[in-house]
Amino acid sequence: MQATTLLPRTEDLFTQGLELQEGAALLRFGAARQRPADRSSWCNSGAVAWLDAPRGHVWSVGEADAAAGLVLRAAQGFPDQVREFTGPRGTETLVARHLAVTDVVEWIFRWTLEEPAVHPAEDRVVTLDESHHDELLAFLNEHSPAHSTGPGSTDVSLWAGIRGADGRLVACGAMSSLRDSGAPLMASVATDAAQRGQGLGAALTSWLTRHTVRRHGFCTLWQLAENAPAERLYDRLGYRNEDPCVSARIVSA
Image (cartoon, rainbow, N blue to C red; front, side, top):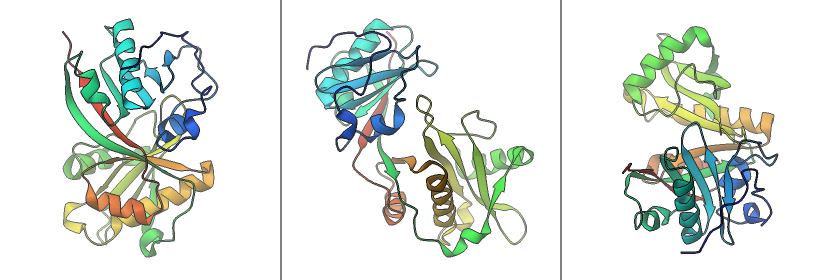
């Protein structure tokens, strides 16, 4: 594992050109280029990392061994603050040689710059506001209990949904944002279990993607590595699949 040096809190993450390389879209979209004064960040010859302080989460991009070195340095420098991390696949194994880790999850950070083809059911999509938050929460708790973002989250700029013939929600989804950069992030897309297979999730995802690309020029999302149906859908919608990541929690001593 490469030796690392703790650099100033306002270290520029974009001096290596790493964000231009394949597999580094999380840096390109996830880290603000205008350095926040309170961002703790590190880099070495093969990786960069930055701390999401409110979550105690270290994000890292680059080569696995170099990224693991930065995660370890961050954990050593902020032992009471760093609780979890995300990095390229393999980072978790290298970190685990020195710190106990748990709750390992493999993800793919996916993104697109293009509007997808129009889905026939997109005309059923409606936007939802604060008056629908209780309805959204009940729907998510029933059909997607592990949803990443809930109604009322300050990171969410838009909720959208599809209703059935009886007026009840049959699908929903949100446009959230990555904390450091503010980049748009699709989240909490869910479909009524009894309505799956009708293309409702595809229509909602296509609508949200088009809306976001038109407004921001791109859209991002996280996909669980073992979710084959989601992978096929995102492939059809044109989302890039070249940024495999892993997340894990650090077990407190």
